[in-house]
Length: 237
Ligand code: 5GP
Image (cartoon, rainbow, N blue to C red):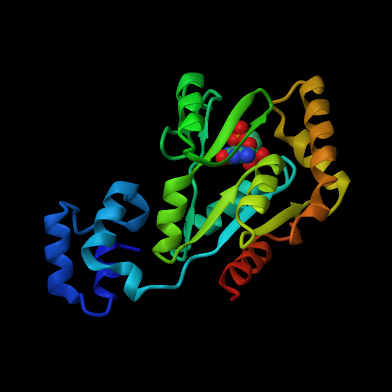
């Protein structure tokens, strides 16, 4: 959704004022909400007092599940749904060749990650496969205040932290149709050595054992159906 469309839809703002606000905040008319940073969002909210006119706080949806189960495809679908915003995590791991800083992750140094932890900037963070991963807190709050459903795609230790810190969060576990199916999906990735594949399977076995801690388990038979169930969960009162 474009910023201008959101502004125009707010009672009491209308097209002329929306344009003025955009000009004042130096935001181009074609800019989409997903492209705004937290500072710009805060400024916009102040400008129009969005909180007062849009009190519907967005849901926090946490999605976990074993590697290879198809979480990133589900995330891609929800990214293109204007009711959702997908959180961008910070990580200390190296970017993969196709990944972009600030899009897939914020790739940070160990030092920077330490500072973020010390400043309590994470909603949750955890170690996974030799690197640290964390969810920056303020954009999650900003987007929820703007009425967006926020999706976190995180591993299980992080999901457990959210369960404690935010009892309203909805925790979803994505499960494969069968263990054999997951094994063959991981085997078909093709980039791993046999040892690496074995390590991934061992980790997946551990992750599968945590499914019962989640509010809902969705079997990933068909991505469209998973996405539809995630949408109903987010939009349910
Ligand atoms: P990958 O390195 O393959 O992108 O991600 C490895 C694992 O880290 C995945 O299970 C992913 O869901 C998880 N992960 C990504 N971001 C975060 C985060 O901010 N917090 C936690 N706890 N896990 C994350």
